[in-house]
Length: 253
Image 1: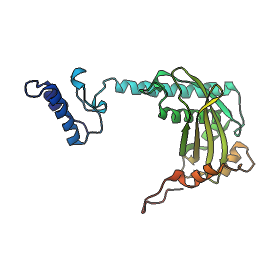
Image 2: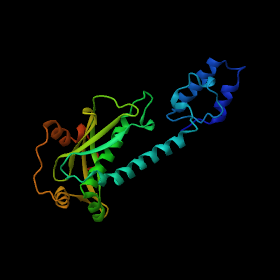
Image 3: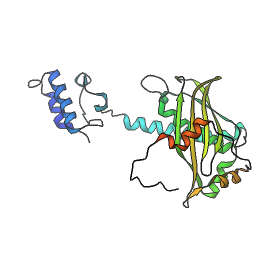
């Protein structure tokens, strides 16, 4: 829900009735009355007039373009992962797959380091690189299978800053009847910056879930899963610690 620009602009322009501080107070009161959670469309308001107005209420005319640039940059990264993945050499599905990245300006937040949400996006690309280089990706596409993330968690140790080069090292650490668990580490030089644990499963476009046995057979793996660290096993069994409210219907398997 957004405030109409007309009334807000009139409040800000009426200098005789409302001094600057009074106008800002009225504007804030208007935001509170309507329960604003999105940017207000306050076109024509100058920088000076917006002093004291919450940042989330300011309308940025460049936002649609910035979102498009971010989306395009991720698509370009995905194309690069697929294109250069095979040229970096094949790996076994149980090997550690190292994928190189660099921090670009559109990865940064207001504190000028890579924003937390970008880490999870980059993890997606690291998993794609593993599936491409181990040869599993074309086989999955032929069968109409695709991966989805069930749970993920991240431990941050340090920050990544502009132009930093780093690698995402992806490896499978275990599986159960329906899920695959992976560890993905952000490494700058030889120093771990962050480590993520991902629990994923595979679905069929025709409907239903791909069992781990089916997936391992497709990948040519005939060994049992290694034992998971205790905390990861508990985290996975507890569904990430989420407590399901009473009366919530069961999730489809």
